Image (tube, rainbow, N blue to C red; front, side, top):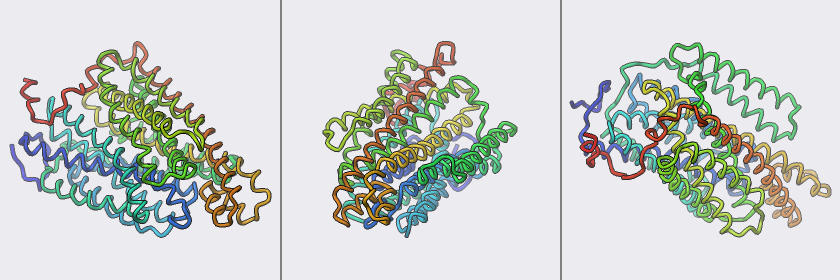
Length: 537
């Protein structure tokens, strides 16, 4: 069966193997784009906080620059999937790529932190359109054993983005202005858009899902209000103020209303009923807490390496490589160990190890040998990789095939929500502790200087350099390290709670009988069409 790529396709196609091989790199490029953007910003945070080289952004603005993207990404993905079912996944993917490219240019030339936050939110909209469409096209393009192999190959784009993003951002920041880390997205989008237009049919589901505008609005407004209240607490260092607890309360109410609306919907975009299944619900809670911890510790690490330790952006990017290498190696290693033992024997202990590596940030100082940091990051990446891949495979595999799409929407939304809250809570804890720790050193400092030094360690260091007050810079470093140590303890507790949730979800009696079959065998790794179908027969 053949079809023109200009029309929608609502029945399965048998595409030539050569075309399958060409479609897969295009989809990987789309995924790489998202992972690149997720990692380059963490390298640029220190520069964006700089009053001279960046936008003079404070901690709250940087939290929003990171969180606005993830917020839009988290709350629009299930709506984007429904748009793909209705208008065709290639059409939605193309729109997402165009939005992402336009928002990247906007971010690159943002005149202040507010514009950057708005541009980052628009980039999140683009990513939300890209990700579900990319996965749907992958499922439609490949069938049988070739699909499992294609998914395994496709997943390497995440590791590649994690590895390349920080280094690329570091090189750009060392040689160009901060906006270059966003402009690099444009040529990638151009190549991906051309490949999509030429190679990808416009697959569309014959069953159209409703768009669920009420759920979309409630989830966005609820998460935004909750995040605002949490971030605001870090700015004013008090939880009793109305502008802190009121947004948090409103956010929780809106999110509760979102759950009620989805429960009553005939075809919900986000189906909370799936979370009532012990394996699926507990596993998603664990992944949400893990991503919460990862987002918080990544936000913290960016300021530790470049701010407290004085690494250049390139040096900081290279220093973070072990995390990416560990994650790339951890996914197939975890799958292999699960097949030889069991998921309960591999995933919860790995998550506990990841939690302990995050808690180990509490022992890092200004003179900690770099090799110790690299070993810590390598172990952290390995542990995270051994959790996310196998657990995600089992979560989707624990559902009936007809619920796989809904389950994917729930899993992706929970993971991104964890990241949003991790940035908000982690950054707020550090801001509150930093301000309390720096206060004794500001008793003899003039009022305007005191106000800037209270904002963040970056502002305090810049002020100390301008006024030739090295004691203030040392006090800022000490206060930051204290804040990082306290934050690391809370981050570790969140990840350990995730390990406990995963242990509960996978305990004997849970629906784990299909665990081994749900985790793809990492070997042999071949491109789709290289004899996989023949072996299946």
